Length: 355
Ligand code: PMP
Picture (cartoon, rainbow, N blue to C red):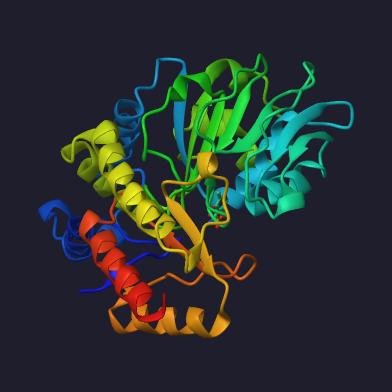
């Protein structure tokens, strides 16, 4: 059995792979493939409507929220958002706590003023900045809830008066949160929601009212909402995979239930690593991510040996991001606890051999 610790695209439930395969061959016993049905048919409308209502249910969204499935991955939101809300005389506030957040900042600067309220770049983004002031005139405050590359995660929602915007690409639906406190949430699907190629967007109606209409239609949130994510041909198959994953999550007990398993997985791994001096945990303890655990060894030859042993034991995706080095273990919703248990045994054996 392969243990898939990939950072994204990453593991999805096996039942989702089976059901998605079946839908390619014969979708809902129609004799048609999901790949050949029109997006404006009742068949696909049902898929989209169910996916939207499952998102609302699983996130406990109130009636002021609109749910969209948009093209382009999370990186498109890095510029689509400021395109809608900024101009030369308008300002947004950003927290710079990781590589993905810094890319969002770079794109926002093309459209308006950007106030970077705090940064942890000085320490390679190994912590989340805590003390900062946000200018009250900011059109919004943007942050990344989970920094996929560096393995940090914001543990609470900032208490601020301006609209909150969050990139939740790598921890959406992994833990209970008051999602209604956000004016805008976006997440590339390829970690906890489904297949790459689609982006989940949740937007508050009041915030939607303030978006620009003087931009290309495909960038205009109001048009996407008015057309129910069907302004053009949506990524039909990717949305279908999202629906299957959302159904699986609901069947597994929803976000609260998966959060318990996610905590078991990350606690098991962190507690094991903490007890072994051979491994270092560079991230500030209170900011550790429950989705992506980053750790290192002060010995490159041993690092290579550890990676080889992981490979031999069919554990994949453990090599750290090229900008951080060391190891990164991604433990998204679909990763079973048993995969972390197998890894932890290997970690302990390795420490016995080399400690
Ligand atoms: N934000 C975060 C937090 C991410 O982890 C990623 C991708 N791993 C992105 C944005 C970019 O996503 P995409 O490749 O879908 O554009």
